[in-house]
Image (cartoon, rainbow, N blue to C red; front, side, top):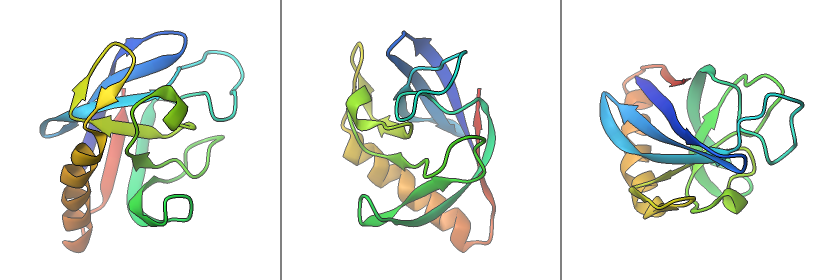
Length: 131
């Protein structure tokens, strides 16, 4: 299974994108993409292709998608949230967006999560390509 995250709207504070699972799935919100040194908890992960697996998050105490082998980052998850305050370097998903936020985030996650889990259950590798 291949997810594609197309980053479409950047400001110095945040990055908004569109996540595709063959077709448009939901909006995304990440921290700012920075050219200089990483600012922990405030920098989006580098563009690239990463393996995704579902594991239990200690922070959220539930099963969530985890991106593997992200250079210089660890614990990068796809989860719910609405603003940059909620990201901590992770990828947030939402069904709608406003200027600097995404909305109906929990609903977007509840639609996306079973798709990833189903692919894993069928023995498929899951990847996210961030461009």
